[in-house]
Length: 174
Image (cartoon, one colour):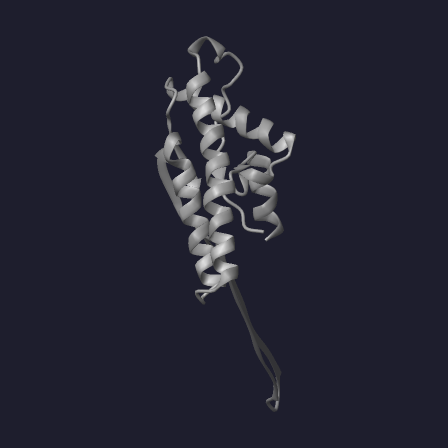
């Protein structure tokens, strides 16, 4: 799992979750990533990929060891035999659900991902669920929508020098 986290960090993935709580550093990374993808696709509203669900990792392993040892003697020549078997199997698989949508749809894609996660956590129809849903819709979705619309509205092709690294957007859960 540490290897996957390290790979995501080295790839420079950008989280779009909980936009209402972003620090200035998170906002700067988001701005840089959006400009990079806008410049690479030469449009203000490019198609972007985002991790749209839970990342799952499946690990499996098996170790089998066996052996046989025999000693025998004939009247003239002693015989000696050894036999051993060992096998080892390891495997891992990662499931990464990715959605592709226009940048302008990213707030809706992220809200859908978060609502799916929240539904799994809050299965009852109670006040806590309604408060969390309101936070997702009002604070996070609208904050992300505002940032995305500002990035789309302020994009200019002549600002594209130096924005060559395109990095994926991801959602994280808290």
